[in-house]
Image (cartoon, rainbow, N blue to C red; front, side, top):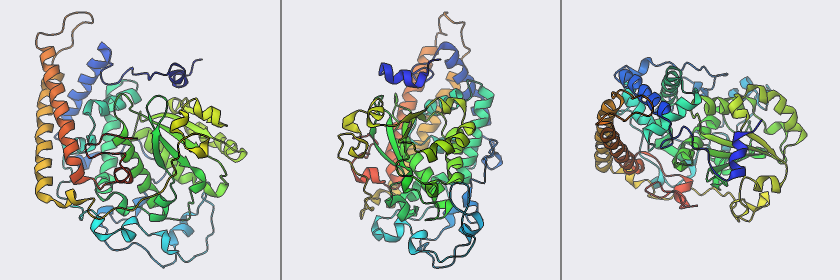
Length: 449
């Protein structure tokens, strides 16, 4: 049986079936139906949404009763004994010492604790929190074309509209519960400093299909070095940064899971299940390929436990690479770091936020104006979509309704205007990242590797 994922690399061409601009007649019709059903739900109360695909574990490690957005701007470091680790344990199977121990300074220290004061974003305001499904949806699209987002859910649910809608609404509920707007707003200032310094996950260039590559050196993972909650926040942050780098036609990432020199102490079973759950339910169709590099007998043993948990579609994207030659089948030598046998001189090095880099977030007048412009663009696209989605589909092969093309063109223009206004707003509501700081992400969100 042919592996469609690997076949793309053999041909050197992405499979664009089911993506924006590459839809069949039936797929276009289903997208219209999806929009109609979503628009019907727009005025419903967002607080009544339910995250139906329940997590396999208590992944809301924010699990503490305190909301993220309620945190003060003070240091989160603590010298108290850690009860969290003694209760939950650590390591791949959750084993760990039950005795109390003194927390090192780095355990809860955030980037905001060590970064220059004038580099931080202003305090987060809850005043614009989503009240309706409409609010939650437009907040979740961020800078994406909304059709790209909806098509991810349709493909993930094999074009079953009702299932895709249920999955999307559950995702919106999750984003509200996890306070994604807060994570995006505060950015790296709220992340664990030791965690981000170790480079547990970092983006570097693209694979041979143009998909951004996310490297995860497993040996850098230490489940006992920070609270589980901060691992979850870091993961969400990485996924949201990756979204900025996904520009059609490259809508997915290539993940290099580097198991070189890993040991059992590096594997956090609870975290790994959370990561898989997030990918499957809240970031569907964002994973192009997983390369397990330099797998040891330890990982092969654990793979027997992991693989049954994977969705068959996700499992088909997992490939083992035991050598540099194997990696270079998927990533060109000039784009592969030297530590993996490539020619790129890149080495991960975290750069602290710089003074004034979030000055646009401090400009409330400009932020309010940009938000108003985006809101108007959302309303215009919504109106155009209502007309477009209400046009009856024709029999395949027959001419489209007289005004069908005009409606589609009007809607396409409105969607382009929304994306443009979203990119202008971004610098006012998202703290700058390492990738902005190093010139990879430009102010207009274009990518320069």
